[in-house]
Image 1: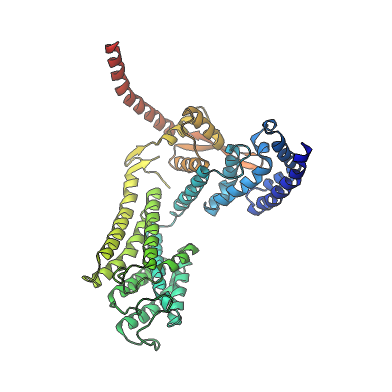
Image 2: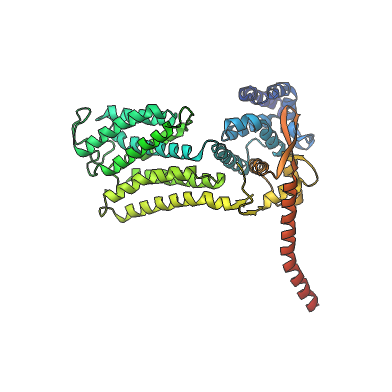
Length: 366
Length: 117
């Protein structure tokens, strides 16, 4: 027996107390948790050893029985709780952790798949509910404008070495819109819009650009707006400018900041044909990535609208859809059946996003 | 979030029904509700913690339950939830509705059974 316990005591105590103490103090939600773990070092170590020696012996109280494992489990639960909004975590995080630890069976160190999934969904759901504090149109317009500007930056990314100034300004516009600095973003967007318009028309406004603008070799594809007219891109930029104007009219009330995660969409959207139709040139992996991101974001928008019974995500989806429709209108007759399927899918998901909040309002599922 | 229940129909899901039912005997905290729903539903409704607190938030926002008191146990806050009158009415109405729906079947099955015996 002593052979079995001896190597376990330092291992159990060492691994559990170190990270525990840091997790307890780092989280700062409940001041007593660090004290609890530090004072529990001694008993926990022996408990851990006892657990291995005689499992049947350790049945007194679920908190102590889990012993060394509880610290690891708590840390893992805390990580899962990061899906919840910060305000919710500081208010109820400690309570959720306590309930999670109370319900966990003794000896468990890995959260069960069921609990993990429920925490991830619960976190997302709470975030969605917390996101409905501002007026719906403000968030709807802001999200729509941000999605559009992200898509436009992504389209310019393959041409970064040829027109670095304009790609940079487009990125600046995305960053400003993301941080809710709508007034500062407006002139930047207008500048980029003028330049994009000049490129589509084959002019050299604002600065001298060698036309056509070819992408960097890694991306492949055609020249920037080589196969598309000025209407569709200008519809997009005009929508952004209008949206920003509407939001700017609200100042000095803040518009709020958006998640940095939006940047992650850019690599997936980059390489899409800037002139619009994705499938006519033959679908590549980049087209698939773009469609996957679009579907993923729209499904999230539908879900959020359903959960919060709120139309703001539907508004954003509609704003994103308008320039896409303009692209199809401008290229009428040139689209392949895959392009039509793509458009139909986007329209279907957007219509669903619009309907769902109202349906959910009439039919409350508790 | 405000539940607009006056406007449309309200459907009570099975977990919600058992959460409300578990509070009929008095206030309970999160872990207590999980244990009680498990007992009342004969081990059928096993609520994950994330789901439970989501449901509690929604029920509290809809005025069906309320926070009775808060306690600090082992350094962690613990809320005790209590059924409001509205919540009690809803769960009673749902129970009556299910009883009525059940009787439609049970009365016929029993009559059939007695006819054959």
